[in-house]
Length: 123
Image 1 (cartoon, rainbow, N blue to C red):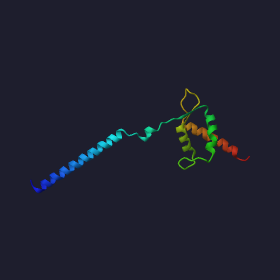
Image 2 (cartoon, rainbow, N blue to C red):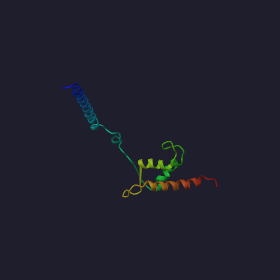
Image 3 (cartoon, rainbow, N blue to C red):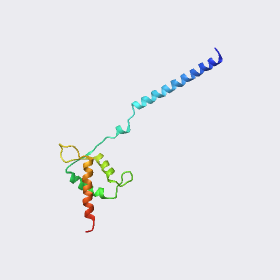
Image 4 (cartoon, one colour):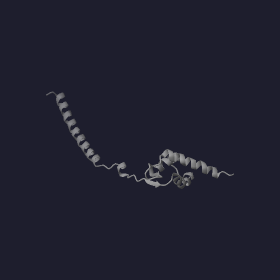
């Protein structure tokens, strides 16, 4: 065998050894992933259901919405606030009906804000 062929054979043996090591590491990783508990699997969603009139719900949250004591992602913006609230609270005025849609909640809250801002104006 020529020297070049021997070097090639040695290099192939080295690469085969490295490949075995890579396969071993892949198997270990696959085993870890099989038994991993993903963060989203650990979070149990437990929505709060408000069984009552939409107007009653808005009267309860209205003062909070109007206050300046909250932020969502560092901003005081009603729409993200309502999206976050909607992910936790579900409003249903009738146990036989679906939950109130976010768009409807947004409209009712906006009406509340418009009406109560008018109340705050000197007159």
